[in-house]
Amino acid sequence: MPRSSGSSVPAASVPRPSGMRTASVIAQAKVNLLLKVLAREADGYHQIETLFCRLALGDVVTVHAVPHGRSLDCVGPAMPPGGLGKVEDNLAWRAAAAFVDAAGWPDGFAIEITKHIPVGGGLGGGSADAGAVLRALNALAPIPLSSARLLRVGAQLGADVSFLTQDESPLALAWGRGERLLSLPPLDARACVLLAFPFSVATQDAYGWLTSSPATASPPVTYSIADFAEWRRVESIAYNEFERVVLPRCPPIQATLATLRTPEGTEAFDVSLMSGSGSTVFTLPGLGSGDGWRQTLSSLSALGSMQPRVVETFTAAHVEPVQLPD
Image (tube, rainbow, N blue to C red):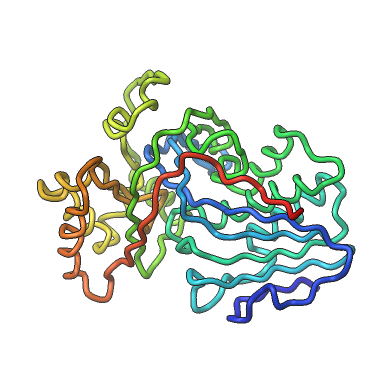
């Protein structure tokens, strides 16, 4: 029977069968520096155009290939009080099961995740865990899947999983359903502040709001590699289509971004956007601005119980590698 745990008991305390092989990886969160929602396909899915950027913040994912059985144990400071729901619905579990179907290996798996990425906030935590599981199992497999096939497995699991499975770069332009990727040279790592709210925005709801409030057609655009080669040029195209429909329905997010986009806020922060379909807002302190941005954030205290939790991290300059024990 499948088993999942969200208790405070360390996952490492769960006894594991002998003969297991192990790999670990930091499953990095992501933000969308650019996100446009394009045509809706006949099956209801929307095409997107997005600039993905990984963060230093990540969940710790350890995968054991074992002779029999399947299990998933989740702990950590970002675990929701009610846990993560049914084990069979967890993306990390689904990724492992999909890998077994594709590779015919292993006979069993045991996954341990320490959650640090805020759950349900548009930071790709579940997708990052899924990508980490695919990469870990492939590193352990006696006959690894090709990179192209591994990405195909990831693409079946969700729009962010392909990007968070590939290990070429922490920065990529993506389109289609997020499975078509152009890896880009990494930008310099810089401070990134996450404002994580105590509520989520369901992705399905956000897409539904867009469908009921269609935007005018996007104007023609031509990108060059130079547009993504330095922060100043990326900042000039930063945008999130979901803000148009999410902000009016989520006053705390709207109030937060309004504060960050005042003259005082734009002096402290170069970019302030919602990530994905929300609810997390991320903001990039101005290059060379020091700690002045902290004072600007203090003005958010008027949100009361909806006050977001501040998480300080950095944009990633590399993809964290899979670690295999000696």
